[in-house]
Amino acid sequence: MSANNLVPDNAETVTTDVIVLGGGPVGENAAQYATEDSGLEAVIVEEELLGGECSYYACIPSKTMLRPIELAHATQHLDGLTGATVDRRALLNRRDEWVSHYDDTGQVEWAQAAGLRVERGHAQLIGERQVLVNGPKPVLVQARQAVIIATGSQPSVPSTFADVSPWSSRDATGVQEVPESLIIVGGGVVAVEAATWMAALGTRVRMLVRGDGLLAGHEPFAGQHITEALDRAGVRIDLRTEVTDCSRQSGEDTGLGRIHGGEVTIQTNGPDGESAFEADEILVATGRKPRLDDLGLESLGLTSNDITAGTMPEWLYAIGDASGEAPVTHWGKYRARVLGAQIRSRALGEEAEEIPGNVPVPQVVYSDPQVASVGMTEAEARKGGHQVEVSHLPFASSAGTSLLRDDADGTAQIVVDARTGLLLGATFVGPEAAELIHPATVAIVGDLPVHVLRHAVPSFPAASELWLPLLEGLPRRLRIPLPT
Image (cartoon, rainbow, N blue to C red; front, top):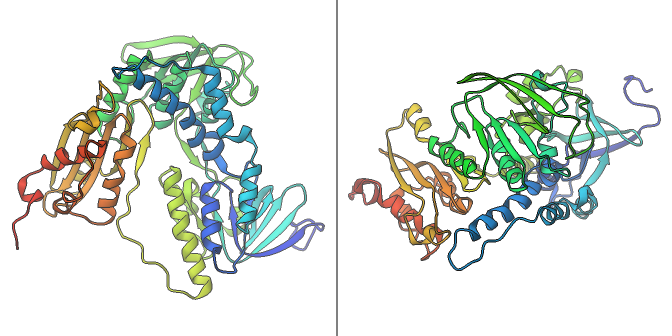
């Protein structure tokens, strides 16, 4: 071992400009933007698959299953079409194709073509701008400029489920053996989306939710619409229900998406008292936490709390899920692009880009119907001291949205500051709602008052026409202000 007792004597030493810990989309974006057209170099350290959680176990595989399911349901509610059905094997095959059969060769080729060096192994911080990669052969990587922690997040599993080898979100997206019955613990985005595709695959799904409704943090009507939709799909939802005990015989990790042992027995306490029941499998979707364990933070005198609080040396950064910010891929990628560009500008002595002060986090739940939101809910806006005006309409309030399905159920709502006319937030629940949220994001980032936004003319009869009745639902003084 070398003098610091951490680096093996046979370790290769590599010097670069930027080290990125984690090769998911966030890490890839950070490395690319830090080095493009600059002469700077970057090393990405990845212990698992380059491309990360999103590419193999989250966003991509879940959407490859949810989109066909959504279209199949749509054909059952469009006159002129004979309803399609979900082909279980074909659906899972489509998923496998999109995750490249869990082979990251294509991702590695992209990184190399972009001039990025990939090191395989577990990354450990051992000193200022120094990272030891414990892989097939140990490598000491030293950075001239910065080290970026982009290690993502991991499931947060309560101790109640510690001994039953429950499914994680990875098993749900990577399902190989479809259980006849499934308990889902949780009522957030992962739980709702997994319930949607597992029910479509033929599983009897039961959701156990501690709160008063699904999708806490969204507008209340969003959770209500999804509750009704899942109920129609045969999913049972138990609200205000606490799991008090969970047991299983021969629970073990039998492989990604395979049933992890024998029958699961659950005991709960809910509105009707104590209950007990069984299922073939259990998915624990009770949240995620930054993946910061075993990174060697203690060698720098740091803890995981320092990372999520942003209390770090000037050369060390955290982005994406690892930072504790909104755990959605597109937000992490945005933050990575901004950070990478800032590091590049600093290294080259260039003036850094000016960043808008109000950049909201859009989010889409790819349930059926979809839920798309950005900015503040009405309750958040009022709590924040805003005087608000709200326009609230059925989703099928325009020809464009009505044409999407013959039963285009859902709700659209915008929240506007009553004094400035600025858009504070928007929520759409309905078919293909994801395609309607970006104008709201642009309006918030650009500080566009609604009297300007109404001059952005949507095509007829596109779904975006829904914005017209939404804006018309606001008081005239906001839509057409008097000249000053």
